[in-house]
Image (tube, rainbow, N blue to C red; front, side, top):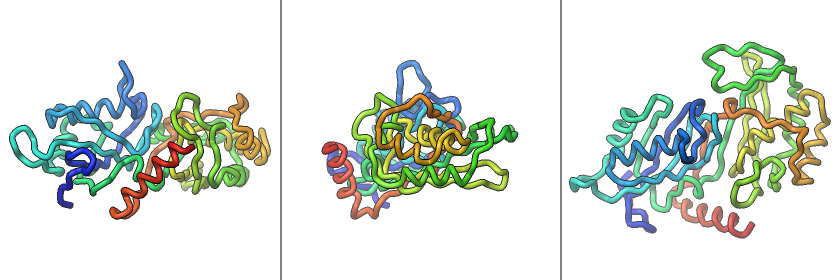
Length: 281
């Protein structure tokens, strides 16, 4: 793709696709005196480009959460300080030499006009892995799999998960302190047992609020272990009140695996719709 000046800033906008092991990070977002993915990447970009760089990410992950397909954007002046044009492939190569192996840049590319990593996205997909029933976790899998001592009933979990599908106010399942609306459209929430007999949930929504996936997983586990009936989930959703009986599952079992965007011609309209909904709600 040819470079395009961002119509709003006059800078070049770049899309960066990357992955990370979130084990030793305090989440995505920069925090004082904390090691974060955003902090590491912005420091590397600033050192490389000799420009202050702000990354805007598709999904702001919590502490310990991983990503295999994260997306962000950043803006740079059209030319570097030597008067040369930026080369995305060179940026990608040099960033991977500067970053630790916990973060790997897959590609850097010129973003199309009006691309916004967060607001242009149509949906995000996560997976959550659980080894239940005191099942042993292989050492190399311990970083992305949560453990649970009780056996969990797959059919009950899927029945409970189905109660959450659709557009709802997920305030019950969002950690206090987040900003903006808690209304989300949950498109998919389905569990299956894999070849190693572990439980894996696939969760897709237009967006997620703070700690939402870990909270809905914890609530469904309450049903899967027999503490509550599936209708309990519907009651939680309707009441919009957080309850102490539910669990919040750890970040390590959660991985962002996909972010989907519309065709380039629809990027601007999609971003406008997202921003308008956020402001109206």
